[in-house]
Image (tube, rainbow, N blue to C red; front, side, top):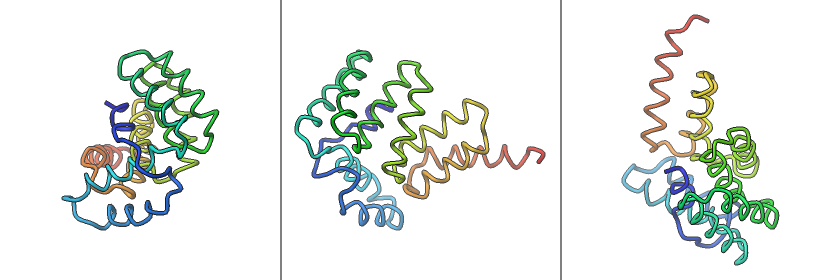
Length: 175
């Protein structure tokens, strides 16, 4: 599921440096929920284009391999993606998802951290990191990460629900 969310879109025009992202994020943050899915899809389209045909081909094949359960092949291809395009955040995002699916939690967190270094607005990675923090018993940190994800995509119902649940749990704990 995570793999599909992070790489579901066909590349459009550019990576996380594309100037169109600012307007899309503003619309996502302030617009109504009816357009949120469309805006999220457009953002992911932009994020998913490395601006290199070679990298895009490797990325597509890595995604296909991961979706078919060929994690070793996917990771090998993604190592090339991140080597050829070290500033392409989605390459790290997909590699982090594949590592997570392959039970390499530490590697996943490393890649997800790199994504946020390159693209702090990456709300999907933030939500995934929040779940990892939660599974590690770090409720407050998970809540904060969900809140940061919701800053960029306030229409994410799953993140909103998880943050609400955590808020209730945290409020019930002694300080």
